[in-house]
Every structure is written in structure tokens, then in C-alpha cells.
Length: 240
Ligand SMILES: O=C(O)c1cccc(C(=O)CC[C@H]2O[C@@H](n3cnc4c(=O)[nH]cnc43)[C@H](O)[C@@H]2O)c1
Image (tube, rainbow, N blue to C red; front, side, top):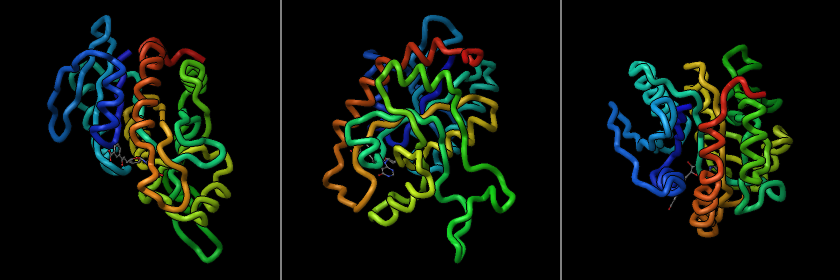
């Protein structure tokens, strides 16, 4: 199986790359550059992409890579959104790993006097993508990750009130990041399954950027992909 791993920033992409313990091959496409780690045969391997911060860049970069692979006759079988994230305390402490069983857009909708309405309540689109259950189970078993909803937002939460509002609206939410839903939308448009894997660098809540444990989270991401890579490559969509 060929796997596309989409991160936001190069530091996250490089953390995933360290799990492969060898140099990748640079593949330049219009607008994006991939780092390719070939697998044991032509139909396997991982391509790593740093698409940029936020759901729009994540969707654009992922869609570009998916389209190029399809036109090349070597489509991806799986797309993974990966990186660091905010964790909702105490459910996902700093340093922990989260595999999404649900990838949900937290701020795609309309604010009303009676509260937030997701776009689906307005008759449009979707706000949630669900990764294959068997893959979530296998990924969590291999890495020791917690499983739960990972929210995608365009704004990093910076207050306790917003954190509480998000958890009230999404009681199963473990983490918050900024790209998963964009990656998932692009994958869904190509009919490719999606997974999201996040290492928690900071609590979701009052903003304290100096306290983010980015190095620890990146190290956790490397360790996770060391265990995940064989699971992802070996997974087939027939697995339940
Ligand atoms: O400054 C660095 O060295 C550095 C290294 C790796 C990553 C970063 C980022 O700032 C990545 C931003 C990325 O992280 C996600 N994230 C992390 N915490 C949160 C959060 O509390 N709420 C939302 N998103 C979060 C997000 O996906 C960003 O794209 C810096």
C-alpha cells in the first residue's frame, strides 16, 4: 500500500522521516514537494508532505499529491494527517499520542443567537470524517495511543472558556489541531481512506506558547511512526 503522510510544518515532516532512519528521495510536484521512502515493492512506501498550517493549505497540498499519484497510475491507498496538537486535559495529557476515530471540523458553520450551527445543519457538506475502525484499532494497539475525536479549527484555542465550549459540543474530543479535516476532505474527494495521528505538545486552554513541549511531541511522533509504518503499509481496506 502507498501511504501519503501530510504534516503542517517541515519540523513535523522531519520527525516522521526520522522513523525511516534513511534518506528519502525528493519528488517535486507543482506547488508541493514530497519526500519519498520506497517500500519493499512498487506498490508500497511512504510519501511525506509538509503542506502548511491550516485546513486550506492541508487540503490543497494533499489534493495535489493525490492527483499527481492518480495520474501517474500509482494511487495512494491511505492518507495520514500527522503532527503535534493541543490535548484536552485530562483526557489527552502533554506527551500522549492520539489516533482519531473521528476527524471533525469544529468551526465550520454559523454562529447564531442560540449557539453554533454546523454546516450540515444548514444543509451543506460534511463536518466529520471517520477513519476505518480496524485501522484505528490497529494503529492504537501498535503505538499505545488513545483514540477519540480530533477537532480541526483555523484558530488555536486560547481561553479556558473556548476549551470548555468545544468539549461541551464534542464530548469525545481528545485533541485539537488545524489540518486533519482539510486532509480528510481531499482524501474523501479521491475516495481514499484517512487516518489522523497527533502527539500532544500543549494543553488546549489559556494560551501559554512558551510552555508548548514541541521537542517532546516531535520525539513521540517519531517513535509512533517507527511502530506505525509497518501497520500502515500492511493495512488493506478489506480489514475490518
Ligand atoms: O516552533 C517549532 O519548532 C515548531 C515545530 C513543530 C511544529 C510547530 C507548530 O507550531 C505546529 C503548528 C501546528 O500544530 C498544531 N497544534 C499544536 N497545538 C495546537 C493547539 O493547541 N491547537 C491547534 N493546533 C495545534 C496545529 O495543527 C498547527 O498546524 C512549531
